[in-house]
Image 1: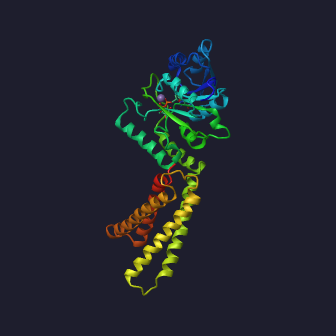
Image 2 (image 1 turned 180 degrees about the vertical axis):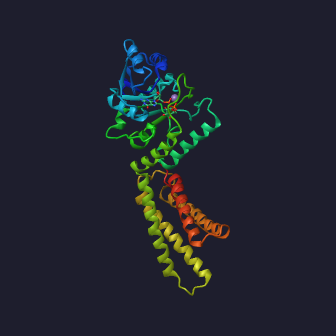
Image 3 (image 1 turned 90 degrees about the horizontal axis):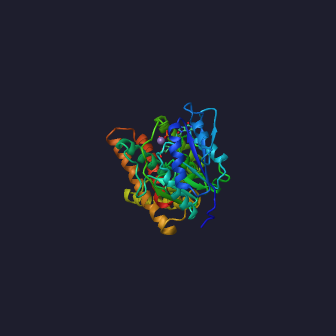
Length: 363
Ligand code: GDD
Ligand code: MN
């Protein structure tokens, strides 16, 4: 249980939200009255007078505004807001009432109950995306799935793309946030010191007034952001380690094969030696990956032998993918067999890395 007298600052980025400010602030106040809190609006010099509306309300409510001269975007507004905020707890929320302000007290309760980071989630039981089209649901689900795939530290939450969350600011001490796109929560999940993460369900409402500022361009920003985070949180380095281990494994495989058999050996003997050399390389790769590539991930069920068993099963699958690709591309597409083999190696590598990352060395 944490000290429940923590001050909360709600950081709200705005661009042309003048019509939404008053109902937003009133609803936040109704929800949080009696708590120690303030609202910090970070406005990018909205031409519709958003900041003037905030100043009008500042006489009645604990609200202030910082105006940035140029429009530098949602994510950087939030990061600036974190720096200026005085709260022990920080929250982020949109101004357009798509995040119902009534969720704030629930987020705060969870944080007071010991969670470091509490996320308003559309994808836990009781949450929903409201009346989105099938296409938008599909894109959102795909984007979340992609984050889970390449950034394992997002796997503990169902809605890593949420724009509404609350956290203890200590989890960001010593952490530099530099979001490429606008998903600040991804940065926090991958780089912060959050240990205990909770999700509270909510329904993503329709925009109350005005229109969205985020376009399809943000989809390519999203991919760039994922790549940048893979580098910054060590997942790219993990791929390179896994590849290096695989290269040493290939040397083990070929050397052992050369030792065990010679040119005149009958096919059966060659296949037996080949299988032995393959298995030796699998065990070699496993030990190196366990000690080196995934040394931070020894929590999975089954212990050392459980992981070894999984690694073996996946490696056999990888061999199947390699041989299948080799046969298929050479036979049906008529590709030169070395080209087919190269494609097969890449496919098997991708399979081995992703499935081991997901199953053998669970986050
Ligand atoms: N300061 C500043 N500068 N604020 C901005 C800017 C900007 O360039 N662009 C947008 N905002 C503010 C908006 O005024 C609003 O308060 C909030 O950021 C979200 O912008 P929307 O335009 O309403 O975005 P959305 O509804 O498409 O996306 C939101 O919901 C997603 C799903 O939860 C965002 O919160 C996403 O981060 C979130 O993933
Ligand atoms: Mn919105």
